[in-house]
Amino acid sequence: MTTTLSGLIDRLPRVAWAERIRGTSQAPLMPTIERLDDAAVLRRDRVAAWVVTVAIGALTFFTRIVNLSRPANLVFDETYYAKDAWTLLHFGYEVDWPADANDQIVAGNTNGWEQTASFIVHPQLGKWLIAGGEYVFGMNSFGWRIASVIFGTLLVMATVRMARRLSRSTLVGGLAGFFLAMDGLTFVMSRTALLDVFEAAFTVMAVACFVADRDWFRHRLAEYLRKNGLVDLGGRFGPLLLFRPWRLASGVLFGLACGCKWNAMYVLAAVGVMSLIYDMASRKTAGAGPKAFRSMFIDAPLAFVQLVVTALLVYVATWWSWLTTDGGWARDYGRENPDDFWVRHLGDALGSLVHYHQQIFDFHTGDWIAEQTHVYEAHPAGWLVVGRVIGIDAVNDIKPGVDGCTATGSDTCLRVISGMGTPFLWWFAAIAIVIGLGLWILGRDWRFAVPLVAGLVPWLMWFPNADRPLFYFYAIMVIPFTATVLAMVLGKILGPADGGLRRRRGAMIVGTVVVIVVANFWFIYPILTDQLMTRTMWSLRMWFRSWI
Image 1: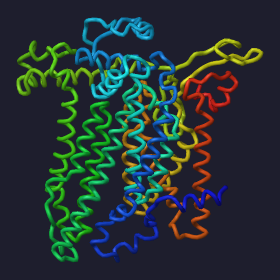
Image 2: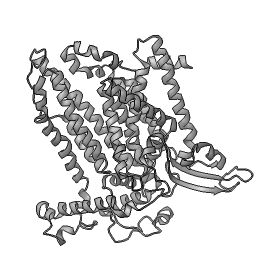
Image 3: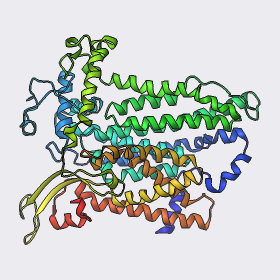
Image 4: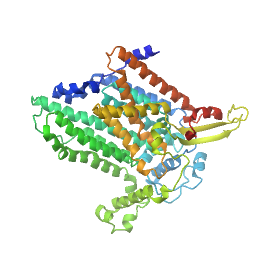
């Protein structure tokens, strides 16, 4: 089997990426232009790379759409977002529902809303995306979940593209995307009408555009040197590049991510800092010398506009339906408080929006939410090792002979949906994080910095907020990046294409990891998909008491 895996890996489209630990000392000997334009190698297998991306995307889509409408009821926080989305379609803002609304919706009465505006604590974009599915397919379980399937697929495809560009390897990029496709938490979140899958998809796209911008900038510096017949900049600052399309796209996508949930702003801040560092480093590589430091005063303000200001404008635009209607929660604040500072300076609509955001912020940071408890709350310290999973839906104690239950004796059956990451994938990724930190810090490999920072920042930011109920499914913002780190570490283990015995041994290790992850995903599949099983079968998949 390992021989077959080795042969398969050798035949997959790939770009052999440098072994940075061994090659760092050799890098300064390379011509400046070649060092700047090191992403040119990606153009060699562009078509094959898109074939890999689309193939993994198709696998992701079809595995997630099977039995999407089951269960037919609203599960977990779908009770908020699916109904909010439906009223957005009808009013342009969220409206309250009666206590028995969920049962009414399942029974077919989908217009039983009340007449009062609802106070919501997350932005509107994710709910508008859910509303798109409801508009096309109706207010039913398929309608309110299909958008999650689509964006869960885009999340995987974006991870392939990001990982490929970082690693300079189609094989590594495909491996990262495949791992994410086999992740239980990503699978469940791609089949549930919650906001986090939309936020994660936009965030990974934004980071992928940021990485593309780095390569674009370095390519433009290399072209400047070629055009002017220069070996390097010779101590000059170099060209001023006002318009950077990939960085602007990153800003737009970060604005869309924040339009789903606010915590994407932490990744935006981290990317902004990395953008400044990489701009200075690129100019230094090009030969700017001490003048590369001027990037802080020239490139940095431009980056702030294209990333932060753009993201802010896009974020505000995601509230367009609330701004252009007059019945939403706190929408009348500006009219009733014309002397408010923000109302006087921004006008009625935007001033009311600022006030609304102050109320949302107070909700998230106030005493009420800090005093709440939840049976599935999970401290972020355990997220990276799947310390506590989240229950999405459950039907317990199905008696033998009922609903096809084949239990015997005192055993019963149940149907559950557990938001559980594929355990071995997360454990392998946790080990890879440690190795990746070493390759970044000790090996000076910038490629590991991007997924490590982008993945660990939205994890670490929850620690100061751990006094309120937090949930494991928030970690969907983490796994695309840690899966990328794992794939990149496995790329190091695999070694160069002409590595001979080392390549074969590396292929054995990589193949073994892949087989374990796939087998683990297959094993937990029944508890991700509402399948009927005996309690004994369910217990076999609950390896730790904290998972119950």
